[in-house]
Image (cartoon, rainbow, N blue to C red; front, side, top):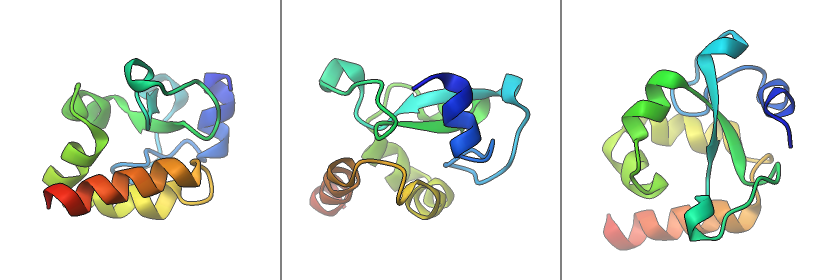
Length: 99
């Protein structure tokens, strides 16, 4: 899925802070990182603003969501129905295990 398609699907809104941004301030973030077997499919990528993506850094998504309650709230609200269910379940499971 192309960047522009991801941004349009997510209404140019960061799934972590919930704010809308112009396309040039957005990035694509992988729910399941490519180094951990994730791909570039629409069910594995979400829109993130540059600030949230930098704040997340190289942490696992569950670690970032645990540390950032606002991001946790917005991610599950905005990513539901767009991200593969298996990825959402995996993140939820990691949050329960380490919570």
